[in-house]
Length: 155
Image 1 (cartoon, rainbow, N blue to C red):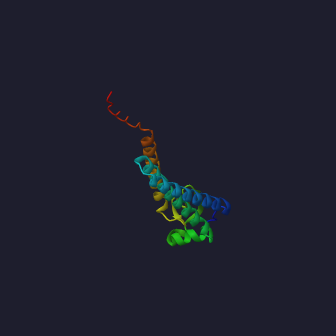
Image 2 (tube, rainbow, N blue to C red):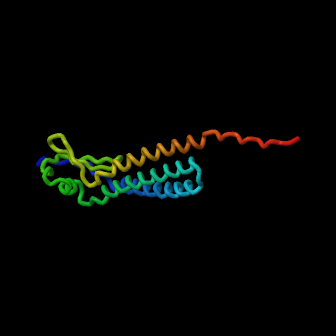
Image 3 (cartoon, rainbow, N blue to C red):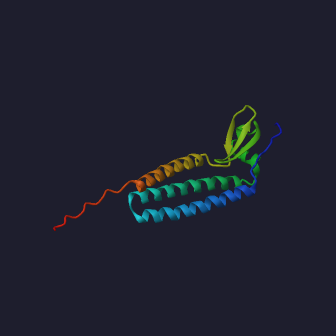
């Protein structure tokens, strides 16, 4: 097997990302439920956007935790992910956004390890939903309210 180079992520950036994502998710959940509780279409849309954003932050944190908890390092993670292809692994590549560990093959392809495959689509879908709902909430907030009809006065 060829000599493998590793760009395994450092613990400090992972821990910092996990803490930031967790605090963000917690804050968004708090805002989301309080906004929904206020009622009104705009508030519900903004609250839904916050909750979708919170779910995206939780999925992101999950991905970072998956990378952090892989204490065995990239070699074992690549072996555990695909034993049949492991002998062809030449290098590793790590991504923080989205969280991913790619095991690069000598043939030019790659396969993922350590981070569950469903997290990136969940993060992406939740982010799209959050942005869409936030835009709807802002549009609803800026929509002019129809003027009230003045009461008829008898003079």
